[in-house]
Length: 64
Image 1 (cartoon, rainbow, N blue to C red):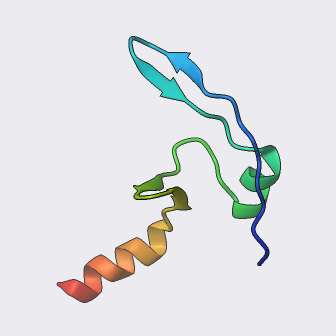
Image 2 (cartoon, one colour; image 1 turned 135 degrees about the vertical axis):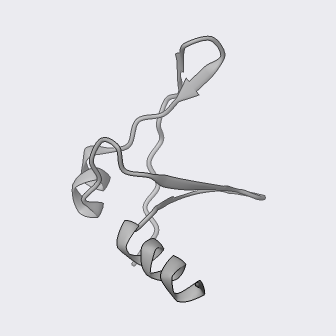
């Protein structure tokens, strides 16, 4: 898959929080919905990953 770059504006929420919205195309492509979890990996870059609940549960069961 070829990288896609979107520019998004951060906005303030609450007392000191900042949020960012995701493009509708991403939401549809990855099947995201309210309540889903994402991981944010902060290193030399910020990486956003969808947390697959089923794969996550399978990892937990395999490790036990």
